[in-house]
Length: 203
Image (cartoon, rainbow, N blue to C red; front, side, top):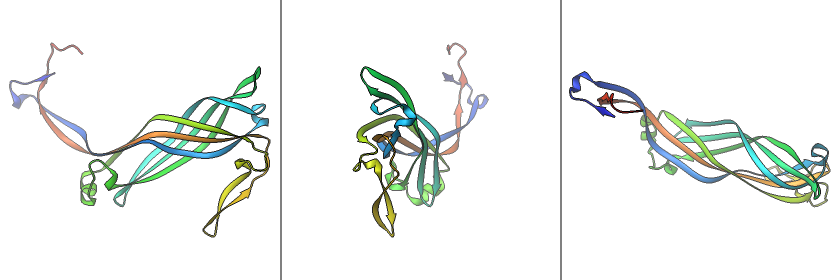
């Protein structure tokens, strides 16, 4: 609690970040891909995924040319149940270095910013990631002729095509990862407060 009977004797000069605008995206899909989990690495075929964990390696935002570029690098760690009842066991499998990039225009912030406001009123950005979620679908065996894990999409001369990848015994799984992305744009300001700490207030 702050109180002050003599303002000239209790001026507090604070250095605080003032938020100018926010960008909030709920449930952003930051990963969607097919992954082959080799039977040789986990001891068999996967029957289901029991849990997941996210390890964020790097999360950055770059302010440039009147827009904000977001980059998230993360590992997806899966807790697998391998085999069929009653002969099952738990295994851990990591899908490393998944990179998600997104460019946010000034008009997408709340409130929207003009280019002049962005240049003059913003010098910092804070990226918050929360509420990670995960979904998956087992697509069969990787070695099946028509398994999505037997083919990968490639760009050839501007056209999207598919090519076969080496056959590996294992479980083909489609994985998806979602997260809430919050980006706060702000600027540090001097904030003057007249007051003093009340000694009768308990912390």
